[in-house]
Length: 214
Ligand SMILES: [Zn+2]
Ligand SMILES: [Zn+2]
Image (tube, rainbow, N blue to C red; front, side, top):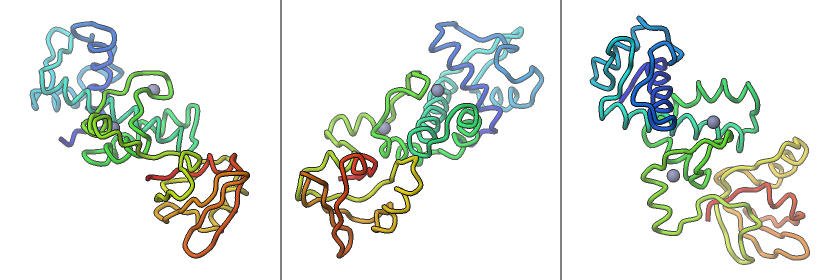
């Protein structure tokens, strides 16, 4: 379902009021979008919400859509903070823009890359998706640090997480880039791995910053 950004924000605020604060409805002036905004009409015409006497209620499909929207928002927060290292207000701002890009299918990919997180960086619950149930059933670990691999195991590099740009450059020069295969051949006293035809040795601190998909 393609909704306007404002309509999605209304659904999120309403979901928090109803599902997390246990209210049956939200007052229209507590939703962050002024009454009279066309986004309310947009949601009402799709039978997602009902507006009565200044109060906004969920219709069943709206509740489900709200759940998916809040899930995307909190996954976007995790993605920005954990992977892209964007924090503070800049992160909150960008999460709001980013979530609208995580539509059907993309949210499952992001969720899988982040190992199906259950909370956002603010400690709020992320409603699980089908991918989370599936991963739990199959015992799939998703993306793990290189240090979780045993010697002889291999995986595909998912991303590098480091705040040190020198380290990042060093790793990239080794061919440690998203999408490349990496084979771990030794874990002690240092981590020795192969990417392509080259072999490298790094310490465990650096190995923890390389995330791979088994
Ligand atoms: Zn949050
Ligand atoms: Zn998931």
